Image 1 (cartoon, rainbow, N blue to C red):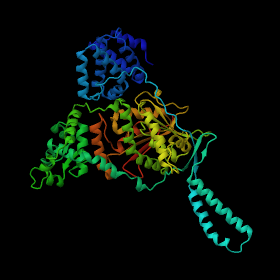
Image 2 (image 1 turned 45 degrees about the vertical axis):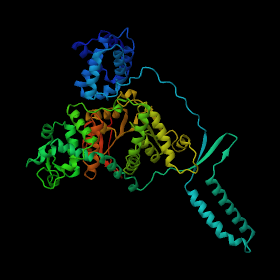
Image 3 (image 1 turned 90 degrees about the horizontal axis):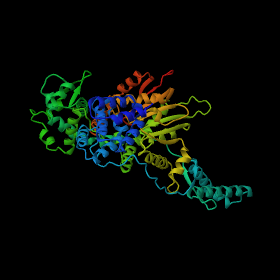
Image 4 (image 1 turned 180 degrees about the vertical axis):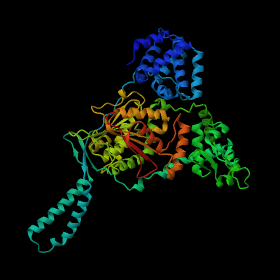
Length: 590
């Protein structure tokens, strides 16, 4: 529990001396689980210039700098959790014309603790957001049309056509009445399927829809070709950087293999950067590796990329360098300083327009994987199970669930499953819109009116919802339930963060799981030889666009779960696409 009196006493006495800075940093680290309360108290303090002097605020920022620079395992956690108070303090110091804060800001930008534009436009996050006006939507009654209506109508129409000759022959009057009744039924059903009914007495429109289709051919949802198309942008820059930095030359000039540490020393690249680059070169067929991290050049590399080869392509490739080459080279230099290249979403700093774009993009590259994930879970009998015999309703927490497509796919497959998507406050409204739109897009529509919310409710009810918060907060601030969750899902989450941060998230997930509950880690693993091109290019993409992210092997994630005591840990390849589900059960008695 945060001692606010002790914190305020520290803040009032805070200055830029070493003892004062370390004392405040230790207090912050001690109360890391109360980061939300820390952020709120620091904001309040920074808002009162009569109380907070420049020395106080400088000392606070130096304490955070000490944590960022010396406690790498907490860097992203506090950068996100205290982003609002950092803005308030920097704003107050800028109003006081402080030159010291500008030097600190420049250092943070250079080290990529925060994105370069994070401090350019400081909005007052201490004020509450104004209430948004909501447009009233016309209510509608949704009627689910069974799929066999089409078949029934076709059979009745066929029967009607075949019965026409009997009207012109001598037939018993009861038979004629039966034929007439069948013809009438054909017309009624046909009319019912092609029109919607207006009920003027209650002002509601009846919308006719078909049941959502969740069963498709596995081959249809295999989107490997799209992953390769999107990630192919990194191929040329990876090779040109390897040539310009003499990485490939270092491997080719020796008759023996070289390990990644020696290659990093010769090129000046850090461990994360050199490993990502070597994995891409391996997927291209230019280098080979052993289990001991020893790398050798292939005959293809020596023929086409060696300076000594009369058949080499070097001049053409180096003459085709683009902006991506310069960006990758810059990122590798920054990564070597263990700074990483941070992005705004890593610290939860997103504008509404950025949240809309990112949610739509993540939905596009996740929706096919979500379909395959749900099918894989069901076919391998890995669905969440409830221990409550009274309700038999299982629960799933979808952490950083983006557009909610994984929760929707699971809820459609599992009728008794309730899913909660856990997302940032700025993203959550767009997540809810995507959930409604996605369900509506999956059903067969017999009209073209937009009633996504009503359709979603008719199909799923309230079995998929979205809760707001930060996954980096303590589990006390995670979405609450009367009973612990039966399952927790991390899909395309762990590759954005360091291994230590992923371990922290896994521990939090186990804390909100019931004993025997299931955890899912859904990633594209590096040790899948069939998809080495996709996984290696995606790992390079993580190097460029995250501060500490990388693709890792399924063995790595299995070891993580086993080390934390999980039972029945296993990697399960997806029925379609390059993904793999690493899953395990929370042990009993924990």
